[in-house]
Length: 205
Image (cartoon, rainbow, N blue to C red):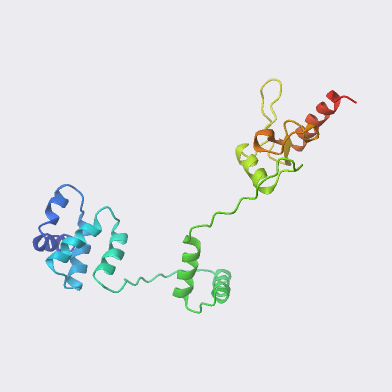
């Protein structure tokens, strides 16, 4: 069927032939063009323009654009999902919260919400004179450390701990060390305590 539809479109739109020969237009796209151009009673000029709309697009994306171009109704699809009672009740609760009683409207609203681009969060500026690392700085330090203690022993072995991680000043805050990324590191609680003890021993009394 697709092959017949494709041949029909090529016959009435010769401009498509070079695109097929170059591999820029496949059988699925030709079949789609034939069906929608026939449904909309498109003119030869419209068929050529429709060709350009399909290039470089998936069949699904091309269909959406062509239906809009030909002023055709959007294609309706039927989705059947089998779920357990708990999931069904969760879905009913979700619809109620969204104030959308119809499944199709609730599903569309939910999908649009998930697909919407996330707004960039405004970063809170970290004061270098503050003693503790703020949320943004802590998150940056953890990511840089790959959520693992950065302590390295004398033999070059790095600590494996990923628990009880703390932000530590390389140059201690008590001697004017800044609370900034270039003066901070991630240590587990044990190594943070060890580093502090070493510094306390070296600090003049």
